[in-house]
Length: 146
Image (cartoon, rainbow, N blue to C red; front, side):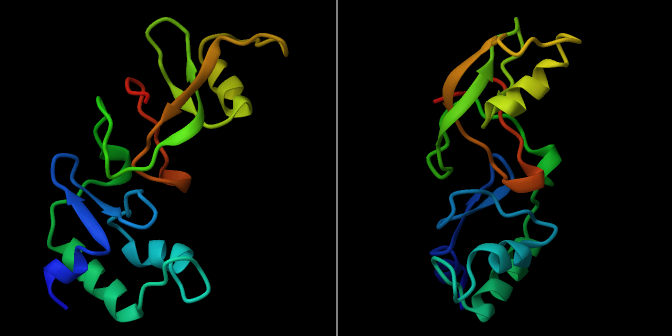
C-alpha cells in the first residue's frame, strides 16, 4: 500500500504536526496509533480498517515529525479536517476563554477562578468548539470557537 492509498484514511496537517483520522475527524496520538484503530475501527464498528492498513499508517506516522498531544498548538481558526463539537461551553472569566463539553466540567474548571462556585452561578456560555485529540488527550482551544 502506497502513501497516496494511506491518505484515503488519514490527512497530515504539517502546520500542527498531527495526523487526523478521516473517519473520526480527530487526531491520532503518535505514540500509539494502533490504539485509535482498536478503539474505533475494528470489524464490529463504523468504518472498519483492515489490520494491514493500520500497520501501514503506523509505519507512515513513524516517519513524520509529529507532536505529542500536550504539545499541540492552539487553534486560531476553523480547521476543516477536524469535527466541530456543537454543544460546548466557553468560560467568560476575563481573558480565560477555556472551553469544555459539559457544564459540570465547566463548573469544575471555574474553581481555578473562584474557591466557591454557587450552584446557580454561571459565568460561561454555550458555544461550538474543536479539539485535536479525544479522551485523556483532549485539549480545547482557549481562543477559537466556531
